Length: 227
Image (cartoon, rainbow, N blue to C red; front, side, top):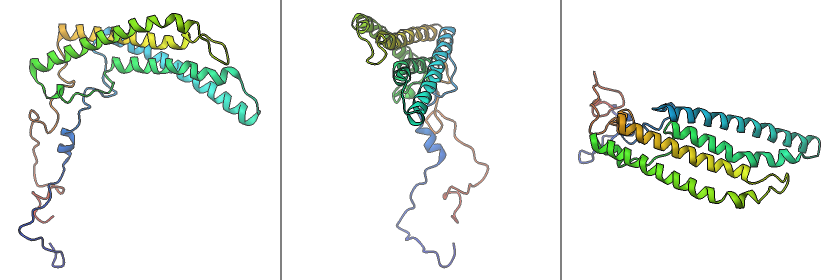
């Protein structure tokens, strides 16, 4: 400490420093990262098919939007299929992405309670959640089937395509996701919940090993009195 630096009063304590371990302990995204791979064959196959659906829909949408922009701003004209095609195909893009995320456990999850469970309690909670997801998605599929007749009677305003072609993306999405959730539930019952998933101990948590420091660090004022 230099001569010109102010000396804090003895009665005032220095604020606690937030370390990387503190931030890591608040992270609940473990097990939902993009590189998580499906645990069993059904989810792997469904995720691969969903990926192809999303990629094909994306390519067609990009081409149609590009054609529509070029024709409108450079040729001063329009193409009906380029105007309505992207909107018609967008539900299939969403459906494919949702299936891929379901296969890799990539959907947003509020796991504040589950992440604090350990052992059999955490495993039972995971199985119960996926079983409930299976029933919910199956019920959504059941309800979506009832909408097939009215959607078949409707058509798009420009091209006159049946709305059922676009709405079918929702039916396929919830049906396949129900199959994925059911397959994951059965897999967890038979083989157990993977230890590196949501139930793994977070860094800085009560079950995480304490970090070892070979010497004082520059960012820690407690170990560096001259900071």
